[in-house]
Length: 539
Image (cartoon, rainbow, N blue to C red; front, side, top):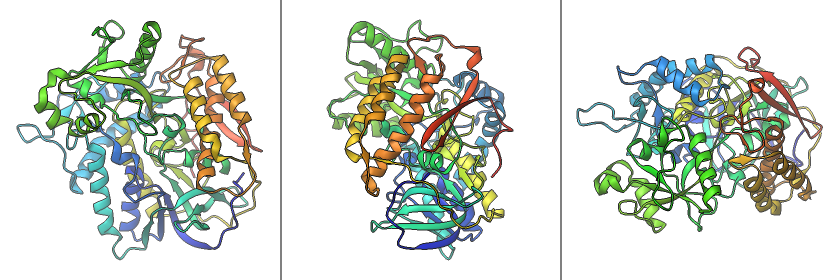
């Protein structure tokens, strides 16, 4: 299925199309540019506008001799609550130190300790210090800077190019069902087709489905929705990580101020209004428990007490620690009227990271030949039911590097685009209602009644009969993702990882399975499958 877009004003051909310029997309492009591949990269904003640039926490990798790959694997599997693909986890953990070394060779500048060695931090769910930071709480910005600087040099004289302010509408497929290009909204507002031998989705997540999120404005599920319409498998969408410590700010709209988990790694404590620690006795790791545990504990505590939010107490840090380790957070909080040096920070869980997405392996290969997915848009099995802190940037680097190397060495050769049926768009004015419904029925705690109500509300939103533009595209893609998420969350009658059901509080061994979603004739189809590695078909 495809969206009813205006007729394309033209078509051009290239070898590879890369959609998105965060850590995953840029890592792939470095290979393609170096190999002088005929490639067009598109990004809906400026080249460095991505979730990567917003990431505070850091990159997880075994760097200390006292740490071990096996310990990192174990921590990831525990956080993933039984749904990780262990083979994929082992691949990632083994490749992570090499990803850091590549960044260093590209000129990335990471924080150093007093001895001049890389300064390692601790975050929730990790049993050892293995989180690498840059500029305290600006790790993602440094990763984006280093990758973009290296790519800018590689683009000179290369057949690879980057087009800004160009947005994905649909993935094109040929008569054999292979991906063969993309339809885009160009910077001038026209619709164009870019035909290609391979399409790489590196479009990020779905955080804009909720009223407050730590995600950038572009996290509207464009890649997941386009992949579904093209016929690709999507899984694990019910597992959305809600970061436990986002500034509770009534003025927040689409972006909340994330207070990095690294603050709790340095000793900050979650408290209620009376100053009582919230995580005491809840989990052996207390404030450094996995994010799903901490978010659920906060929501449960607020439900019991009627308080509007919790508080993060980092006043013991003093001004020096705040200024040296968390300067960005300090600035953002002060802008919102809170001084963390002397005041506790009001916090509340908010949408942060999608553990699910387009089914793919760590080289980006999906169920649809010619289509690749890397970064947050992909579900590789690494994150399972709940992402371990700071594994995502590392995964984006590793997967982007692998798909880039793969496509630089040879690509499939699809046919011409084939006609597909159209699927109805959603009116742009439905967007506030979609977000409100998701917050009420598909937030940290869910139930059968709430998810049924969500399904009904999603069905009732008004359709758009004209051709899509940017605003209707946003509403339609978020509506598509919300519909699949609601169906999968209703289907999974247990609580596991980032998916919590009030009416099914226990974890069921019978649900050590993935829920795979496809679109057929515009309808969502769900199929439960065992944990799989071999079933991820190669493109």
